[in-house]
Amino acid sequence: MKQKIRIGCGAGFSGDRIEPAVVLAEQGKLDYLVLECLAERTIGLAQKRKMLDATKGYDPLLEKRITTLLPHLVKNNTRLITNMGAANPIEAAKKIIAIATLQNVQIKVAAITGDDVLSFIEANKSSITDLENNKPLSEYNIISANAYLGAAPIVDALAAGAQIIITGRVADPSLFLAPLIHEFGWATDDYNLMGKGTVTGHLLECAGQITGGYFADGVKKIVDNLDKLGHPFADVFADGTAVVGKVEGTGGVINLQTAKEQLLYEVMNPYEYITPDVIADFTTVYLEEIGKDMVQVSGGSGAAKPAGYKASIGYKAFYLGEGEISYAGAAAYERAQLAAAIIEKRLKPFFSDIRIDFIGVQSMHKTTFSNTSKPYEVRLRVAAKAQTAEAAALVGGEVEALYTNGPAGGGGARKYVNEVIGIVSTLIDRNLIVPQVKIFES
Image (cartoon, rainbow, N blue to C red):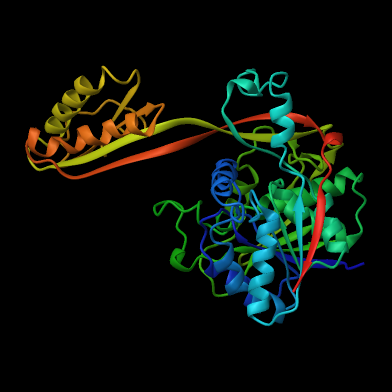
């Protein structure tokens, strides 16, 4: 068994930049590269694409990422783990094999399935309630249902010799925990080690956040060279300790502040951070800055994994109609207010809930505008929910009509209609879910 491995995180969400992953794959001296590209609504949207074309449903950037990264992965003997399979890991694996064939590369790809529990949910939706509202799932127009799998099937894929592992819905830290279990021979019921590995995975999973991207504010928290922000890697040791760093010469910073912010990111209870692999305790984590862009991570523990898997349920919530128009110059805010009053009167017969924002004045926090300062320019945004796309289109149409119907000086009108996917969650007995690993070779 190895005593140390290096894992890099090249993406923290579906639309993340590709260049930092290339730098890691080319210069990072990695054993593993993880691309974490799946959020709650992302998989619902992927399921919609799969409904239209059975060969789609994986991440839209999969082809571009794999085409770019594959030569570096092969050259440097780096294994890739990613959840870019989204709603269709099997077709994603086939696409990777096709890319490898074009590049004349021999490679073994593992697709992990079993997270798609839509058929189970549909069959039992009257008796299953959501966690958020305690409503039966039968009250939702469900389009996707995916359980958060843990590290175990990824470990199986690594043991089978896969160089690229592509999954659907897997808990984010589990993508990083799996190679630690595989390389160090950790027992999956050693919950202290599972907790330590989950801490490292959580620190890495959002990529550029721990290297200063989401940390920087440009005033008190200054971060240099954000235009070429580097993504992180961690040297992880067999005892579960780790050192987080980044490739020398890349932008950003890793220090105690960035590490602490990421450690607490999206953590409701640091005593019980629940994943499919362990209930991790973050309160005993110790961080130490040991050099430039180097933070050592030790401590952390865990308790037995939960009896159920969390499942994320995507459903058709509503159509959102939006319209925007700008007013500038003298009395810009007053003209925007007049426009808003006109729109509200015209839309009120058709919509029960209309949202009006004066962007640049009070759209974010809905604070009361102070008349001590008059804005020179204001952008008016009007939005409303509807059950059909046609009804939602009324919103943007009315805003656009303000061009010549007044008030004076409106410009830059835009209108949008989007179908919104809602998300609720539930728990499923883990014994009802059996992940599968399917191997493909070029």
